[in-house]
Image (cartoon, rainbow, N blue to C red; front, side, top):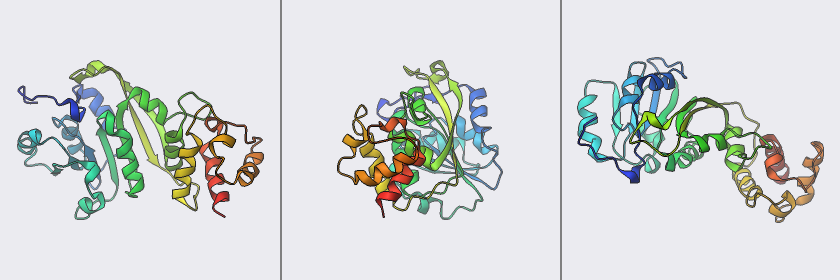
Length: 262
């Protein structure tokens, strides 16, 4: 990393420096030379360098001050770098001319855009086999939370619908430059065969509304829905409308959404 580089707070730049942790992160996926990895925010290219030992990489970097250094460092490598905001890109179009068998996302993502990035991948139906990301530890707890736990919320339900989630390992704050205020965690999200929701738009709205006020019951949060249909589903699982959303597994929300769609 160029010593004169000025880290930018607005981009959430905290570059991982521990090479053993970087190797561990890459090794959570069995990559082959025929695969493609999307990396969001390569920074100084330390993770990129490790990924390129295994496969080809498409990287998105928003900070143009890194352009010269990254292009020089990887000029002879099987790497395509797009210097733009990942959230504004047409990802399917970007990968259309790249030949690959399986697609992965492996990134040390700036904390403030972690959820928008995952939602973009979901909403644009980008067919990834697995996402491996380093996130703020607190956010990782929310992503991987189970029903009944303090951290379980709408994002937990949504991610569990699409992925098998696993916490891989914790990364202490001392492994970054500059040093962040919190620890991080590497989590993996593996695509799974999911229970089919008939109407995904309704499903997303249902989840958002169900968790709108965390301390309120389903009866209160979903009062604008057909409560009779909702209660019919709840009774199958020995619940009623006085239950709070954080008690319910994502599969129950799938069933409720499908009942409401009829």
